[in-house]
Length: 292
Length: 157
Image (cartoon, rainbow over the protein chains, first blue to last red):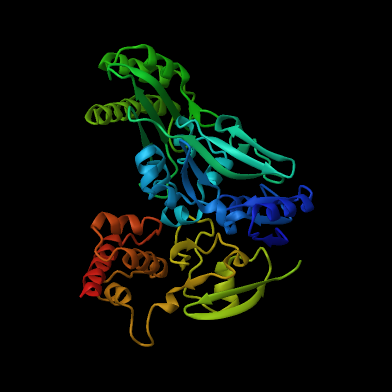
């Protein structure tokens, strides 16, 4: 026997009330593609599941005051197919378009992908380079949390889903001199966890000769989606040249710390970081030069 | 344990039953409603044989609590044919030899239907993507893809 009650409130206040009444024995659920399995395996125990996908206000993707805001009920499919997301944050559309399988993308939500806290989550990796923030709501009030702070370890979120609801994720719209890209390496094109995945965001300066801002995220090479800070700093300080780009990718490979697993060895993953990162950076630079 | 009301429209008919909150829609369909066309495979969301169409989208009924589906419109493989007349996708699967052991077939049919409902003339890559969440361990993908293309041609006529 598992959870003994399942509620699908129509608004956030009701969801919070239900969680509060459950006194720590309730848990927020959205698409359920991870959580239902974890509950079946007894990795989590809950008496009450509070399904937030019936809350209409959380099903929207919005553009507001320079921010892109994605509600907690928005599925991977909806993110992947949204033309504004494709324009503003292509890496995110690409990442969400490669989660699991079509059925999983129809069910699972982007915010759920974050709360599941897997280090190579195809939705969360692009959100890292977009420097996204999560809006957390509980009976105590609202607060924003940087995505990076939302992790405690592999599969362990810093968000207490027994008491708090993540209502949305947001990130700043990037300018014209900015573009993003995503890469993914897996045994099959669907239903296969990544051997490696990553996202890159690059912003050029006005002359288009230098990278003003670089953001790189890679998984699974650490306990959480990994920001390659040394490689980012290097890209921001060096002139754009094949030699320097290769050096940045070498640094990223060096600072990443992948494990050897059934999916691939640590050495192979390190090698592939250099290859895939280089290709992704080149693709983004090509695109930025074309739009100039 | 409090049973909760589940009212769903299955294959065009509203039905109402009570279910335990942790009963999965797959078991609800198969055991409570007797609709055994939806197959139980991995029960982990990997194989796709339990695929149904819920409110116009393919979902995995092994990962959906029945109570979550309350109020939803559901199509299972039983709802595809009209009486004795097979749905054009089913007809094409039969004619093109797209069925081997048959276990993946109900899920394949529904993934194909969800595709063709939205995209009447899919490219072969789009067909492949649409069935990428349905595993066929007889590996008869070539004929399945062909059958979906044949069905799409016929349905456009």
